[in-house]
Length: 202
Ligand code: AR6
Image 1 (cartoon, rainbow, N blue to C red):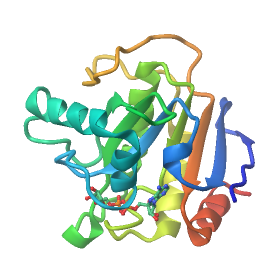
Image 2: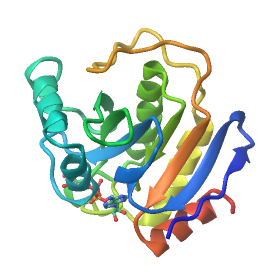
Image 3: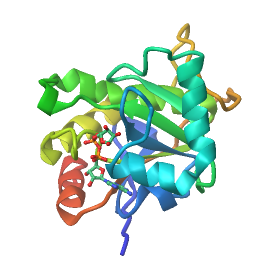
Image 4: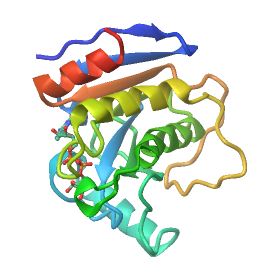
């Protein structure tokens, strides 16, 4: 079962925040965000699910990024785009959440995952983006905290892409001024869904 409840976000009337229970790999948004690791090597959780559903083109794109623009990996809090491979989404935007188990407890790092991903999405020309609960699984953050940080970060983000920051992306960037119309949080479990609905004020 998946439910959706669109609402206009007070901070930016052009940007709708929606919360949905379901599997992020089947979302029809232009881009989906992956809770990746710095090596972009695939893994468990949502990362494993996205790699499995996208197929080998995604792993090849990640390897190419490591070989070229990210030889030292993707830093925590940053984001980078690849093809979506076989996914319905055209792009996967990989971000690395802070790992609480490794002592990474700074909320700003987690907020940066969401804003950096939106910057990349805007640069690509995506109009809709789906996010999982980054860092709320293997990386050990409390989902209530993740939900608050995520919603605040999206509300605080402004649609204009940041200038002067080259973002490595394998897909060809497309500049337009339509901007991102929908940010969809896609949660696997009921508790996660409730946390995000509360954070979004539903
Ligand atoms: N759709 C939506 N949400 C999902 C899905 C799915 N298909 N699968 C899991 N979730 P996690 P992290 C939820 O562990 O904490 C990987 O090994 C899950 O229930 O995927 O950022 C990476 O390679 C949870 O609420 O990401 C990294 O090494 C949320 O997604 C590390 O795990 C995030 O859980 C990243 O850990």
